[in-house]
Amino acid sequence: MYIPVTLTEEQKALRSAVRSLFDAHMDEDRRRAAIDSERGYSEDLWQLMAEMGLHALVVPEEYGGAGGDMNDLRVVFHEAGRVLLTGPFFASAAMATPLVIEAATDEARRHLLPALAAGELVAAPAICEESGSWNLDDVRLPATVRGGEVVLEGTKHYVLDALVADVLLVVVRTGDGLALVSVAADDPRVEIERLETLDLTRRVAAVRFHGCTGRLLSAPGQDVIEQLRKALDAAVVALAAEQSGAMEALLESALSYTGLRHQFGRPIATFQVIKHKLADMTLDVERSLSASSEAARAFVDPAQRAVAASTAKAFASDAFVKAATEHIQVHGGIGFTWEHHAHLYYRRAASSREILGSPQEHRGRIVSLLLDDMPELAETAGVAGV
Image (cartoon, rainbow, N blue to C red; front, side):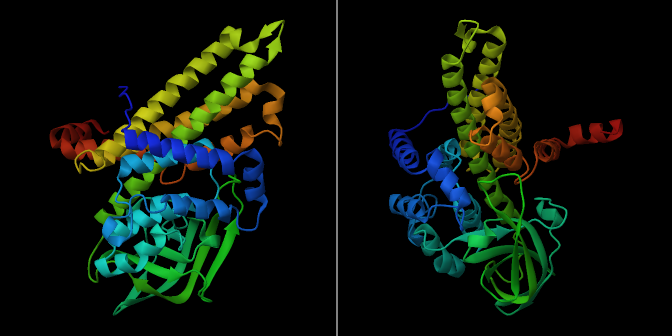
């Protein structure tokens, strides 16, 4: 079902300001320069984003933030997706910040959130292990809790932007369940290895903890798996919004090129097969935007949050890969060249499809959640061998 997307006047102003900022500081040349730079992003743009309050968007006012909601975050990440924003903004603002808000104690929030909100601290969440699963039930990294300190021994895989992080937020398993721990990224007992991945705009690393000491952020003796799930749902909504924004940019690029490129004496946009591709892209952009908007709206409702977030991620992930593929096709030979931006969007599409769970995993989650809400249906499915 398509749900029209409406923005408040404040959100329209936010969208306009963010788009102007990114258009001015993350054009094609600057994006390429950021990709080739040592840190992988523009620190000048990072500072401008901090001055605009983007890092502080969903941080509660009592911790130095703007006190915004998921609808505001969705608007910003839609714009970030349009330009394939490089750097740790997603890892720090959409993943790490919600983890601290939802799973940390008040003392830990007061310690971390003001610096995160000001853009003075870059945090990288470390969740996945060798299997690559984002399912919190699969977290196995053991931690020994000694008072307020935690000793870690093991490896986390596919950690976004660990190489430029000041602090790592590590999800670990203790005798009480899952806990959230912070570890200084420059600890000599922490080894960070950059991984070669498809996406050139987003850097990923493996992080090995060799008996290092971290700080327990969640309450001692508490299993915070539900709080962690809520935080990751916030990141899922932001990622779906980013995907819809990237798709929108691809559609605009395809429309522009097919209107200019002539074959057999007329624009290729007039050919039926091209019309079909562009029509399908348009529908997928609108559906993805609608799904991410609905997920942002539903975030405050515990009964709807998880299903809405997974629905948005599952649809947007598949649609983004499809749009990136079609975008290359309608550009013909030039779309396959290194100099063209098409391959960067395809790389981001293929990579973000797996981040925070694949479409198949999210569809499986939706089924499980719906069956939990309808035990009579679950019983029927069990009898049928589903």
